[in-house]
Every structure is written in C-alpha cells, then in structure tokens.
Amino acid sequence: MNTRNVTEHAPTEASRRDILYIATGAAATVAAGGMVWPLISQMNPDASTLALASTEVDLSTIPLGQIVTVKWRGKPVFVRHRTPQEIKAAEDAPLAELPDPEPDSKRVQKPEWLVIIGVCTHLGCIPTGKSGEYDGWFCPCHGSTYDVSGRIRSGPAPSNLEVPKYAFVSDTKIKIG
Image (cartoon, rainbow, N blue to C red):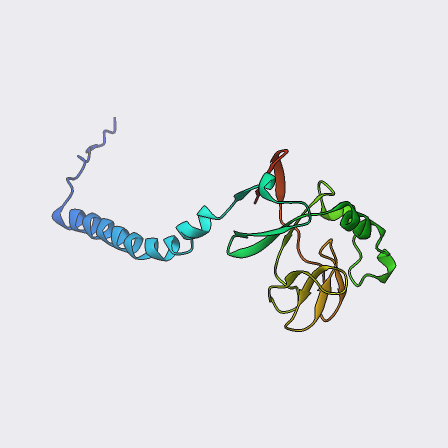
C-alpha cells in the first residue's frame, strides 16, 4: 500500500502588503473618479437651457393679424395669428416659384396659427415681421424675403424659416418644444 502524505494548505492571512495594495488601488479609483466627474458633468446642459426646453404660449392674447415673439432655447419664435387673407395668400402661392417649395399645410397645424423660429436661414439674423414684398418677414441684413408662411421667396437665404416642434395643449394654448 502506497500512502501519500497529503498536506492541506491553510488559507494564508492577508499580509500588510496586500492591504496596502488594495487601499492604494481604492484611493486611486476614487481620485480618478473625482477628476473625471467634473469633465462629464460639464457636458450636461445648464439650468437655464433646461428651463427653456419647452415654453407655453397663450394664444388668446394675440389679436388677429398680429405677431408675438417668444423666446425658446435662446431663439426667437414668431407666433402669428393669420387673417383669412394671409391664409389664402399662403395657400395660393405657386410652389413651382418657391426656392424651397413646401405647401402651407405642412407648415401649420391650424391655418390661422403660424409658429416659426425667427432666425434667417442665411446667416442667422432676425427678420422683421409684416414687412417685405409678401407681407411676411424681411431680413434687412442681406435682403431675404419670406412670405406669410415663413417660406423663402427671394434673397440669399437657402431655405424656409424653421418650424419648431409644437403642440396645441388646448384651443388657446400651445406648447413649443
């Protein structure tokens, strides 16, 4: 019979060196996290941007034929209460003559209310309302003319004024954003 001498190894206790390695690794991880956190945190939008993520506009205060400018995400937004004549002019515009053809029905949810971002698509100027050849908007900086639907009609601007995402909360209130 061959018997072997089997020895069992007892689990070794953690030495001081092992504890120092673990403590140093933990301290380095916490220090790295402390340095990276501000870099990641600064990429979040600031409080003023978050506050302007959406805005509500009371339409009952806008008289027929008037334009109100509200601020949304740091940009001006024009809300125009269009008259029946303005609606007809926007719907009857020949699309073939437009540099950026888009029917009026795609730019509005309700024909009497036009909501557009008031930044010229040429160089970012702010056009003036109820002016220009088409009684829409006119950018005096470079001469871009927009109609009562915010579509580019003449000038160097390459595209129509942008329509932001908006929804009717009620018959007299919209939420932009």
